[in-house]
Amino acid sequence: MQKRFIPVILIALLVIFHAQLWIGRGSVTSVHELQQRLDEQLVKNTQAQAGNEQLAAEVRDLKEGLETVEEKARSELGMVKPNEIFVQIAK
Image 1 (cartoon, rainbow, N blue to C red):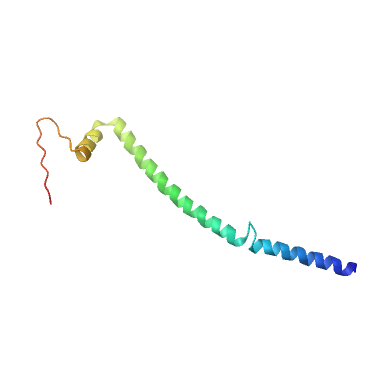
Image 2: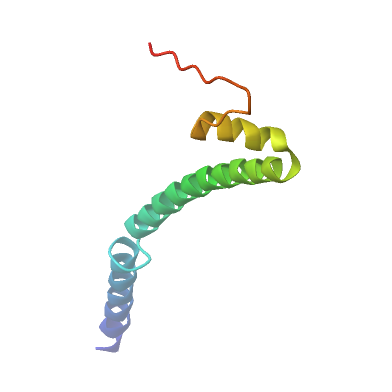
């Protein structure tokens, strides 16, 4: 009886561990899915970082120079200086 008991327990433990490897919370498929999600998030973070750097450079330019402010006012708001004539050409 004792000779069969130990191999049965070892086989049961092997089956349990093998099932966890393929089905459980830390399974191969679960780890692969989490790795894909991590890679996607890293790409999004890189894009967001590039956008943040662009915005930071724009803020720095706005703080440092009036030329950028004037350029934005002219292009986005259509503002003109005194004694200037605004001409818009439609294509």
